[in-house]
Length: 422
Ligand code: AMP
Ligand code: GLY
Image (cartoon, rainbow, N blue to C red; front, side):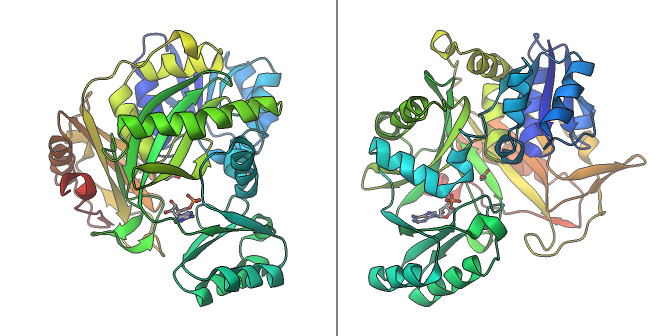
């Protein structure tokens, strides 16, 4: 089987790594890919936001199965274009990807199926939004409706911060994404992520994870795309997973189908857990990054079988084979990230590291210059390891980190602390 994965980050490197191990994978192409991905798959430089381009590329390369990694091509309808052309495709339609692309839409779905989530109101003008904030008081959460590269959410601890966020959003800081604003009740508790495959009708949970969004140790410093993650997330107990399935995930899947826009792909539910109950924070229409890195390390080759079953509508016929294991990934980022950072610094020592079913350095933002690997993004490497316990996974991941010679980079030293120090 010839497989095309769309995307260029650590998530796509992890997907490619898992898919490549499956004997059903004959040829693997990742577009556009990165320097790490190029070591295990072919890479192709095409515009992955353009459905027609992707379809033509698939036809020219006899692609049998397309896996869409990031949200942007999903929101742009690339999965629709592929399916219309008769290509077997993993990933939701643009209509179904609205679960990530529009926060107001997700709230509407929660209302329709009575899924527990934060109380909210929607606004298209500043004055009534500000009145609402003054009436509710702080803390309160202000969200741009649309995709804003993870930056459109302001968790305001004071009323002044919330009011300023309204001015920024209606002032155009997030462009069209901020034309509508959702204002939400602040939820306290512990956050965790739950990943569910669905073919539109059936649902199969494939794991839990927690990430660390702040840049520095002790969960301090600015917000980032994620500085590390681990799986499973102990806070998401079996009981809570079942509750989330019954009250949030399955009702969402049924409501999407009822509306004629069934959701097919991976549903990534961000949950807030407080007092033994889970509430929905948000949905994403894709695997998390860096959560996919730990999930793929745990799933291995079966990830391809599961994604195929999703695309073919036969998830009721498959199951996940779990090892009773743990995985942890440490993000190495360029000094300065998430603010301004330099590109082009050289990374040494990678070729001497083990790459096997328990250790893998996934590349998130690298490029090859002559024979050298250089940093080409903010988040650059995802140093990932698996162990029988979370502590073993963490020790193994940091042992790899310590062998990487990259003065231009930094990482947190405390990934997993919440689960280990509890
Ligand atoms: P989102 O993009 O919706 O996941 O929001 C980004 C982050 O903001 C989440 O991961 C939470 O940490 C935080 N957040 C979002 N909504 C709320 C809420 N209603 N209460 C507390 N924190 C929230
Ligand atoms: N790690 C958070 C995300 O992928 O959205």
